Image (tube, rainbow, N blue to C red; front, side, top):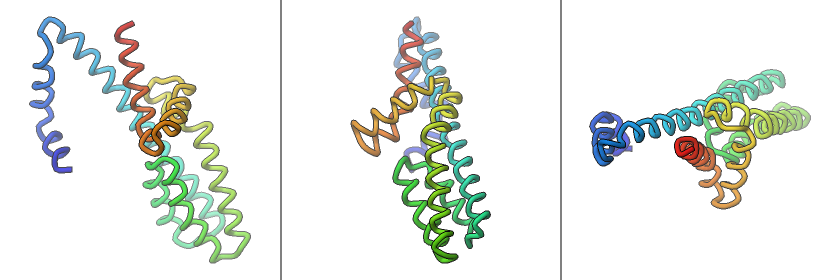
Length: 176
């Protein structure tokens, strides 16, 4: 975090250093390539934050409908933990279901079903569409990146799959 803070506070000098490593005659093309990569990665981050917000909002609506105590606090927890692929969903679902069970068995079952519906919607519709739109990546590539990343490198692969496909796509488009 300390290194990130130093880089963020002096980003202009860091950029000048890296652009200085490139030959002056190809620097405009390099800047164009880096701008494309920056747009793609920014889109991935914006898309993931939008998915977190949608997931938290839908969870809040379900918790409110089932009158689960601490519905706002639980939905904020869900919103934040949705940033972690797969495990964030599981970790954030447990307290929601436990609090719903305090209201009754069928409340717990109802919340479990609601959470499964939300996550199916997120995984099969929202993730590919929102991240694909924000990062200008075809939704099929988003799904491929998530599946291939998770299959190859587990959690880290799932985290880095879409940003890597975004960089590769921008490199391909630049070369093309």
